Image 1 (cartoon, helix red, strand yellow):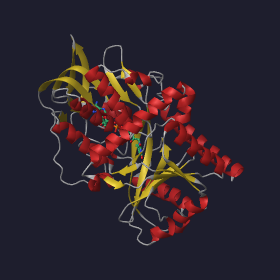
Image 2 (cartoon, helix red, strand yellow):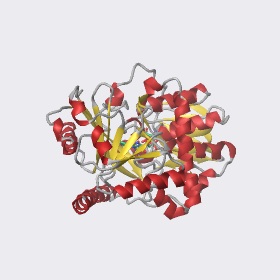
Image 3 (cartoon, helix red, strand yellow):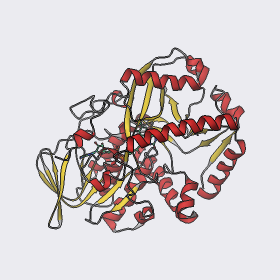
Image 4 (cartoon, protein in one colour):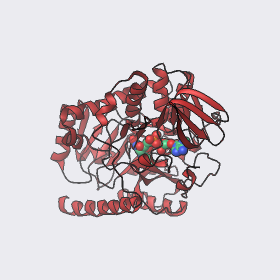
Length: 445
Ligand SMILES: Cc1cc2nc3c(=O)[nH]c(=O)nc-3n(C[C@H](O)[C@H](O)[C@H](O)COP(=O)(O)OP(=O)(O)OC[C@H]3O[C@@H](n4cnc5c(N)ncnc54)[C@H](O)[C@@H]3O)c2cc1C
């Protein structure tokens, strides 16, 4: 037994002991999709992928797409049960480490290649949604990144550099335009990411796994991997009631890996973060938000949110090592919301939930191969809905065709992420961020 259950024992993950999705906007929006079976036999495959978040689902699809015959995906709970089916739904190019910090680390050429992988992933994501946009997308109208600080030239220059160096099509929004659509004095200028999407991420992750099945992949849910053992040239991947015998194995478990593979577990820090869904706001929405876009601000302890077509607001943010109760979490998140939009005082929350991001020390994903020959694709931090697809594509190309693009990620290795003090470190860093945001606000605004 690998102990993953103990590791997952938090108030949010314990809500459903039967390995079902936690209560959230996303799980409430599911229809009667039939589940994938539990693995209860011995199966053989060229590649076994462990972990059915967006990284694992996109990877098994990438393998099947490249002609790998019947690759297998085993998920402990349901497809999208982890961060991938609980997040804010913002999908845009890039990684958690900002583009110009990547330039500092690896130089402009490699940074452009790395960023380009996520731009290609955006195209792939759109292609994979074709014909189902109404069901899978909540908004197809771009995302606004607003500045909390009075720094017009900084925002303008960021837009120019992103467009020039990374070939983006960002648009500068002066503060008057921002405040026309977002009625809050907290915001200054902004930039608009034209190609960004906002998806129902649980449905979308499920859709990707289904596409893989359509190409011959076998997907198993409620099949927690308890042990991975090398026997001769093959991997024996044991689940509760079955075994996968594979030539290659890939770990895509990120923050939820428990102690299945300690080298990988030590390289990602599970950081809890939260989302709130309000009641329908009706006409009150117009007093605060009049844009059909998602928005996020540029504090280091930022919020991100989006209006839903039925006038509910989905609001995300915060990092915490203390897991508040559902009611306490609703109050904390509503307080954050009212800090930006005091005119919404009195609104109620429908549901609030949390999830773990797999944070790496360098804020870049970890993609590569270990000495024992097994592969990993993890650590997408808080900007993972596009970069998981980019990471999955390079990992799939490496495994299926021996391509070496994944080596672009070599400078971002399996650095120790700070366990067992990690949660304390994450909380302390978040508090530090909150204080430095406040100091900056006083100095700059
Ligand atoms: C609340 C929240 C909001 C976020 N908002 C955004 C956003 O708006 N935009 C964005 O780009 N990113 C966002 N992120 C980050 C993004 O969700 C993640 O980077 C991304 O989903 C990571 O995907 P993953 O497949 O690597 O991990 P996960 O989705 O966590 O998947 C890992 C899977 O592995 C499975 N697993 C673990 N152990 C085993 C085992 N032993 N056997 C079998 N299966 C196992 C787990 O059950 C889980 O399903 C957010 C994250 C959170 C938590």
